[in-house]
Length: 137
Image (cartoon, rainbow, N blue to C red; front, side, top):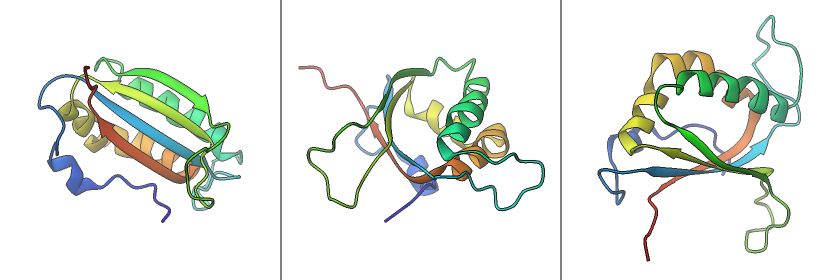
């Protein structure tokens, strides 16, 4: 099932995440061949990857500049060794947030919803976002 929407009800709980401390968001990203802004006027045509990297990331960084949010990893998917044949991803990203409440506040903010989310929705064909804590062995 393809999805690009954040589950708003999931933002109300931390599930099994630690209440305090960093949260690592694993992003599995598949881009649209051409970004789709639903025919919005004034939007120049380009690929989903271009929109994500140039427009979404720019706005996301601006919105999170004071929140100690860190991009820890961004890489292209080379080979899916264990995955269904119909599940393909273009990029993987890991973003660190100080805690889950910071993530929830950011993605619920008016700035995110108006300035960043439209670019994410225009750019992505499919997306998985998985919240995790670091396991210390």
